[in-house]
Length: 271
Ligand SMILES: Nc1ncnc2c1ncn2[C@@H]1O[C@H](COP(=O)(O)OP(=O)(O)OP(=O)(O)O)[C@@H](O)[C@H]1O
Ligand SMILES: [Mg+2]
Image (cartoon, rainbow, N blue to C red):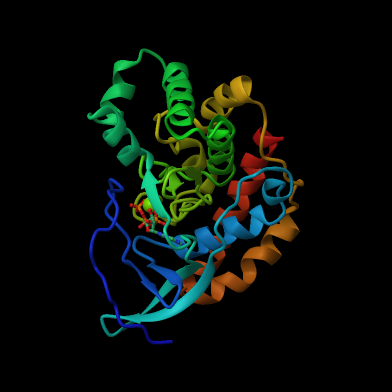
């Protein structure tokens, strides 16, 4: 498949690690791998979430990603795609933008002024609910952190949390952007390092604490949201296997080991 790159602009502020190239074409958003196997991380996470209670028992939804091969700047690249989740007359407002409009100053400085992680989490959850009228925003945020904790997504910065805005009302944004999960950034998580030590050293954002602490604090206040079956190693291997074809043969067994190790190590903390 050949795609003309129609936009190389920075469309939303900012991962500290720079942005993946992405564009909208014919109703689908494409994101190209940048530092490792981000597309596989997106797709694999959405496959796991198919087994969850999210769209069965909650009012929340998640983005489905697919693997793609695309030609960008004349070169064959691995990417993922997702159906455009914005209906007409709807826009996405990141939490960072929302608070900027509402407070007139930055959310991160407001969060810094609070004196504990617990206070920061409660503020983000409850102030967003107040501003938007989305009463279940604390539960939505809890769910987001549970998903991140399962797949060790360390990139939940304040522009990877968002709401949807219609003319006069807000709605929950489908859960999106787990591309940094599963140790996909091989620059920060080199292939030769044993997965367990990498997994244990990842830091949860946006509060720069541990994944367990982020989930426990939110669950204590707002209850457990995410329910999943216990995945066996064999099942996880079968799920990841078809996605490996998009990566060089020499990397496949490493990627398999890292993905399976992440879920096996993390899932007991979510049950
Ligand atoms: N399926 C989609 N439907 C609608 N908008 C989308 C979709 N996918 C991405 N976008 C838009 O692109 C923005 C960035 O997407 P995403 O966070 O997945 O990319 P990213 O490059 O991983 O971002 P970053 O590295 O800055 O966290 C979103 O905030 C949204 O505006
Ligand atoms: Mg993002």
